[in-house]
Image (tube, rainbow, N blue to C red; front, side, top):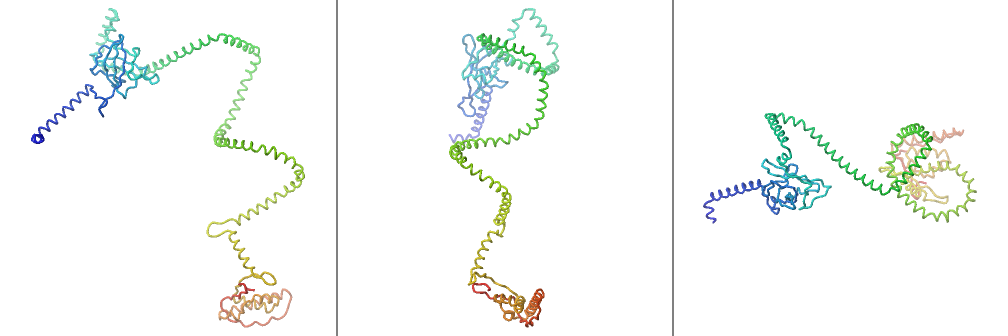
Length: 492
């Protein structure tokens, strides 16, 4: 077999192409002949739902001839078999599944598609609020109309009318001969009228439904009133009494009607003046709405709290209040004086609060606040006063002095014995020991001169006289000297 195919490859390909063309042509012909594959065939299969329609006559309806079912000009299915039931023709409609939504108020009309009476069913599916017809259901004969042939219309006319109609048609044919475009233009001018007439017809249809509903409701009302004639008689008597009272109050009613315009005018003025208030109140109340919603939970909680605290207030606070009343009366004068002192106390505590805030403030950056250095100050104070003798604690410290300052101390100590004792207690070094440089000679001389000048000024202030001792020769000194430390780390 393989050898034969290889030997006749061209012939085999030609036969395959012819077979493919035959399949395509056959499929095209069958599709135009409305040949449908079953629903189980994938992609190209078709699924139909069967419905039935009752017609008084099904003339020219031929099953299997591809007669279709149309909705709004779109083919949605085809006509199946036709059967007879109780003198009525039952026409089967095979509707595609995607269009299978037919409702109880649907209508079906048999209409010729061509002049040869190739029939189609024009279907109006109806509205969903009337309920859907189940699969296999039947559309009743009251919702269908068969095709009407012209001879059936003419058969209802007498001989003279048919003659006049014939003359009219012949004259119309002669008049319209060659005037197709003019007739088309004329009919187009009637298109808006037809649209408006369609709207009027729709509104009249709705009005008819409203009138029908009104008559039905009026019938129900009349029946209800007929069943309650006793109550109606009582109502009429009561109404008569009411109108009698109105008649007796006629003068008052006239006075009320006379005052009504002025009252309405005042009310109108008040409403106009309150417009600004209402325009502002609306947004304000809208903003307060979350607060009101949150207040509900707070009030519930408060109610629970009030129930829990009622026994405490009733059984404990109320007796305590009675017992404390004399004491409160005695404290009233003191409280008045305290109230007079309160503003000053308020100012004092405000200043104290500012001071504590300043002490507690920690500024940004590497610099620390006052409280940080307060701990260091406390530590340093304890260190300074840690040494003592028979006279009590001694402050520790380190004294730095330059050569001219040491020479000032020496000059003052030589002339003022009282101050000299204090200076000697400092145990400061001598200039002759620490100021041993040629550069420090000028500083020692300058300090000695300042010391002598200070002593002279003191003598002059106190009215003293007497010559000062001669200045000692300056001893060369170097950098500023440091006093020796006393025991414990500080100068005494």
